[in-house]
Amino acid sequence: MGMLIRDVLENSVEKFADIQAVKWLKKKEIQERSYKELMVNVVAIRKGLRKEGFQGKHIALIGVSSVEWIESY
Image (tube, rainbow, N blue to C red; front, side, top):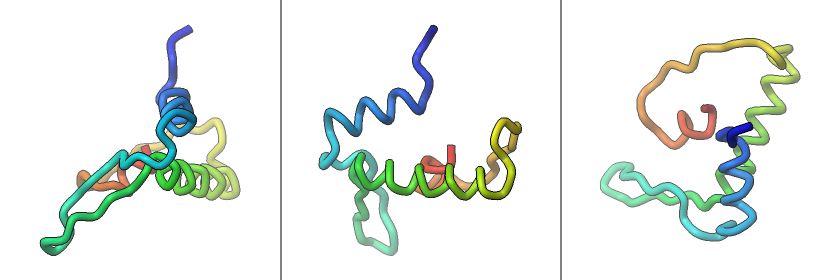
Protein backbone atom coordinates (compact mmCIF):
# COMPACT_ATOMS: atom_id res chain seq x y z
CA MET A 1 0.00 0.00 0.00
CA GLY A 2 1.29 3.48 -0.86
CA MET A 3 2.08 6.22 1.58
CA LEU A 4 -0.62 8.67 2.56
CA ILE A 5 0.01 12.40 2.96
CA ARG A 6 -0.31 11.81 6.71
CA ASP A 7 2.55 9.27 6.53
CA VAL A 8 4.74 11.69 4.59
CA LEU A 9 4.17 14.44 7.18
CA GLU A 10 4.79 12.11 10.14
CA ASN A 11 8.02 10.84 8.57
CA SER A 12 9.13 14.41 7.85
CA VAL A 13 8.45 15.45 11.45
CA GLU A 14 10.53 12.52 12.71
CA LYS A 15 13.47 13.47 10.47
CA PHE A 16 13.23 17.26 10.21
CA ALA A 17 11.16 18.47 13.22
CA ASP A 18 12.86 21.84 13.62
CA ILE A 19 13.53 22.57 9.95
CA GLN A 20 11.29 25.13 8.25
CA ALA A 21 8.73 23.32 6.13
CA VAL A 22 6.85 26.34 4.79
CA LYS A 23 7.70 29.99 4.19
CA TRP A 24 5.32 32.70 3.02
CA LEU A 25 5.15 36.45 2.75
CA LYS A 26 2.72 38.36 4.96
CA LYS A 27 2.72 42.16 4.72
CA LYS A 28 6.31 42.21 3.43
CA GLU A 29 7.49 39.97 6.29
CA ILE A 30 8.63 36.37 5.78
CA GLN A 31 6.73 33.94 7.98
CA GLU A 32 7.93 30.38 8.62
CA ARG A 33 6.56 27.18 10.09
CA SER A 34 8.61 24.12 11.01
CA TYR A 35 7.52 20.54 10.40
CA LYS A 36 6.87 20.17 14.14
CA GLU A 37 4.71 23.31 14.20
CA LEU A 38 2.80 22.09 11.14
CA MET A 39 2.10 18.79 12.88
CA VAL A 40 0.81 20.50 16.03
CA ASN A 41 -1.71 22.43 13.93
CA VAL A 42 -2.64 19.40 11.81
CA VAL A 43 -3.39 17.38 14.94
CA ALA A 44 -5.51 20.23 16.35
CA ILE A 45 -7.54 20.41 13.12
CA ARG A 46 -7.90 16.60 13.08
CA LYS A 47 -9.19 16.61 16.69
CA GLY A 48 -11.62 19.42 15.90
CA LEU A 49 -13.05 17.60 12.89
CA ARG A 50 -13.46 14.39 14.90
CA LYS A 51 -15.16 16.29 17.72
CA GLU A 52 -17.63 17.72 15.20
CA GLY A 53 -18.45 14.24 13.87
CA PHE A 54 -16.49 14.32 10.60
CA GLN A 55 -14.43 11.15 11.16
CA GLY A 56 -14.83 8.84 8.16
CA LYS A 57 -16.68 11.52 6.16
CA HIS A 58 -15.72 13.14 2.88
CA ILE A 59 -15.33 16.91 3.02
CA ALA A 60 -14.37 19.58 0.50
CA LEU A 61 -11.56 22.00 1.25
CA ILE A 62 -11.97 25.34 -0.48
CA GLY A 63 -9.74 28.33 0.04
CA VAL A 64 -6.79 30.35 -1.13
CA SER A 65 -3.30 28.91 -1.09
CA SER A 66 -2.03 29.40 2.47
CA VAL A 67 -0.30 27.64 5.31
CA GLU A 68 -3.73 27.11 6.89
CA TRP A 69 -4.92 25.39 3.72
CA ILE A 70 -1.84 23.12 3.79
CA GLU A 71 -2.49 22.19 7.42
CA SER A 72 -6.16 21.51 6.77
CA TYR A 73 -5.45 19.37 3.72
